[in-house]
Amino acid sequence: MAATMHLAPIDYVVIGLYFAFVLGVGFALKRSTRTSLDFFLSGRRIPAWVTGLAFISANLGALEVLGMAASGAEYGMLTCHFYWIGAIPAMVFVGLFMMPFYYGSRARSVPEYLRLRFDEKTRLFNAGTFAVMTILASGINLYAMAIVFQLMLGWSFNATVLLSAAVVLVYTWLGGLTSSIYNEVLQFFLIVLGILPLAVMSMVEAGGWQGLERRLPSGYLHVWTTLGHASANPMGVEWFGVVMGLGFVLSFGYWCTDFLVVQRAMAAQDMTAAQKTPLVGAIPKVFIPFLVIIPGIAAWAVIPHSAFLVNGKTNYNLALPLLLGRYYPAGLLGVGVTALLASFMSGMAGNVTAFNTVWTYDIYQALLRREAPDQHYLKMGRAATFFGILLSIGAAYAALQFHNIMNYLQLIFSFVNAPLLATFLLGMFWKRTTANGAFWGLVSGTTAAAGHWAMTAHGLLFHYSSVMAANFSRAIYAFGACFVITVGVSLFTTPRPEAELVGLVSSLTERPRYGHLSWWRRPVTLALGVLALTIVLNWMFR
Amino acid sequence: MASPSPTRTLDIRWPIGLLFAAMGVALAAYGAAFAPRGSVEPTRVNLDLWWGFVLVIFGAAMIFGAWRADRRAASRGGPG
Image (cartoon, rainbow over all chains, first blue to last red; front, top):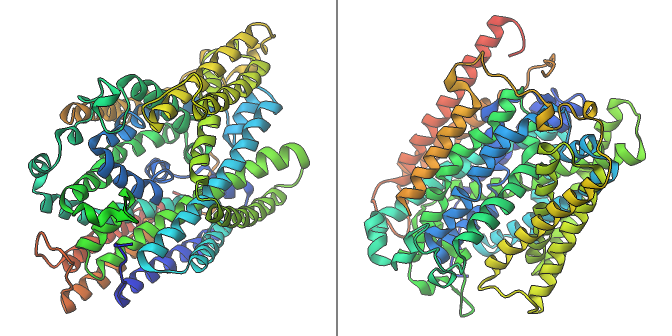
């Protein structure tokens, strides 16, 4: 690979400082981790700015950073849709409209909300699929990390996997979710401060926005104007797929129901902080395209395209590593590498902490040991951390054997998350939804996604201009199937008495009141501000 | 509402502040001593030196915030 870099001793000093601090934080947090609630939900005492940064940081893994820069180089500004339409509206929605039920119900996990609202089988269906997904995601993260550092720096695959897994084990074992959240916030600042000079340098070299306009075809630099027809843009998508598939189903499915992110809000210190968690996270999220996507575009504009060739094929994933090697001197390179290292490790820790919570509360406590002293569940959580990491290492080596496992993971995500969104929307906003309706809706939504995938793969019935267009469309079908079946079965089954649904369903729950807060401290003000900012950016880069 | 825990959790601004300050000092000192250069230099500034300063300032701001919050909590005599 052309981007192989060499680290100087100063770079190792910077990386060493980071490892020392991460382990130090774990030991410092051990003292305040005494109960299972401390371990799994940080004792519900984290302020909104910390949970908010952790909320987006859990999603801003190194794969995302490298992938979004790659996508910027390949598709240009169209990539911004993953932020400005594919994240912000959903984050505002979950904060304003769903958090009152997640946090207000005192559920300790997303599957536990499903048990409170519906029944045990719906919870187990969700807990089981989620546990498998997080372990796979954690393992693939570990695999990608070892591959990236092997290609970039020549580090040994085995050493990277085992060393980073050991560090993640130590700090999540000691401090549980708090350790994971603290590392996510630390990683957020490392990514911002480690990549910012690179973003500035690449724009200076490209000659600013005007320079990019001179160097690239105009389609690269617009967000909306090329979406009239799938053939008019490099992504092969059109506006309906972007708005409904990505902007609604995929994005709301992820941000509103995925326990990995929702867990951060559940750790907040009170209802206001829980509601503000995704809203606070949305503010930096709006600007992340300037940090990762635009440098990716600039890389394609200033670096000779031959540098992107690997075995004769263009590999856009090299965009960010090429920029690092191009601009960063020894020292700063250490900071950039630490930022990537930190975001890989916190991506793994986030998955592991979500896994140990769902395993302990939703599978072990629900099925195997219902009544036990709190210390027992704390011990089980630590044991689950250990086994979760062991399984992740196994998944990383499995990924090494089957390279396309990543594509399958994306697929599983779309099978699981898209229908789940319909279950949650109906569960929270329609009191008539019944447990059987929810369960069979979920099963049929997942089946519809699998059926759509099988038919597309064999060229039956559905034809799409690109894989991405097919993904958007599959999400819409899966959501639609779950929605229709849930409504249909609910209408023929008996709903639960309204008294049991107070605090779980919108029409039966009192809204949180913010009369005591000045207007600019209320969640709704923050939400409107973020939305306005997003609209302005969409318009500016249309 | 959450029941306040008897132990105060470590303020996250301490480790963030200390880590960035330490990284910044190492970076700035290295930049001042060796003025290392990237392969391509669009701006011709000593990146390590100046970005080291930025990291130190950021770290110091975090440490100040943590120190002030701890002092306030101590003067209230309870968990913050």
